[in-house]
Image (tube, rainbow, N blue to C red):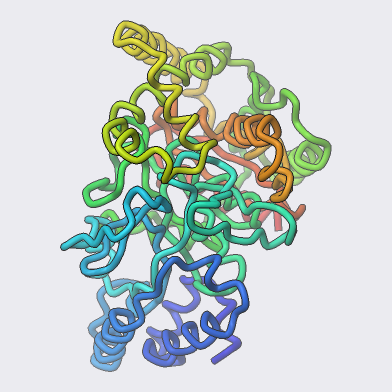
Length: 442
């Protein structure tokens, strides 16, 4: 059974369907590994062992009867601790929500459960999902698989660590400015940011109602496609026969290469070479609207999130990590006219982006321009924290601002990802070229 614990969710689903793996034994093996792991408490906020074993037993009976509910029926996964889980604590990485126990599952969790997935537990995250680094002194900071002295990326930090350290075959996180893609890149995983509104946010602790999205962190593009499907309650995209031959990609030049560090740049350039060798046509592209979108992040994101959380935060501000508190409070400096003007500018930028990229199959960029920052320095150097956090989220934030879908893939260089951005609501097309790119990148 131990050999199966490193397999993808898709492979485990196939093995269950073929009678090679029993869901009960699989869930039990994962819990054994979790309990034995020295970093488990840094990764999981809480386990849902009773629920998981009950779900696994039901999946086992369905498998024996030939009545599986989906290709992932019986596969266990982890969930970021902002998805409501009936009867279990859901605290979004913040002492502000300590003791919060919802009565019902989040809609995406309910959908996944209805398709037979098994809930292993809830993973640690950046406080209230408002950081791309994954550092959280309020609860716990998960590890980075490539650097024991670094942070794992956030805000879906524990989600990424649960998969990278072999404590779950896949995980579900959220992405408001890069919170699925940054930790995926820094832990050598696939991460999918879905189009805003495609997957339900019902029962998710919000950061930004205008920009929050739900997405999987996985070992393969196939896993990402299947997990999106079960959360949506729809058929999975068909990835068979995906090829890069004749595909046209734009290599974005605007903003995404500014201040990039040596390793991410080298990994990105090498990846472009591999995609070209597989038949892709790659053209450089400047889109000034990207800079215009990034320029209005302040009034749009902090302005909204402080409006949502102000009363709760100011009732107990000492409960928050100071860097996150300060970031929330930035929203108080923006007025309603600032917010309205920013939205008008962003809508214009979205139109300009659509016009500039419509002829391409995807737009490419380095996922994160920096490597995982040093944990100890983040704890002692506020300027370093701010600089690295903003840089980590700079490239990924483009997809959230423009309202599109995006996928990060490992490049083969530790903690360096390549991002593919697709048109809004075109996840199926993006996942197809992503599957072909995944094969080309090796």
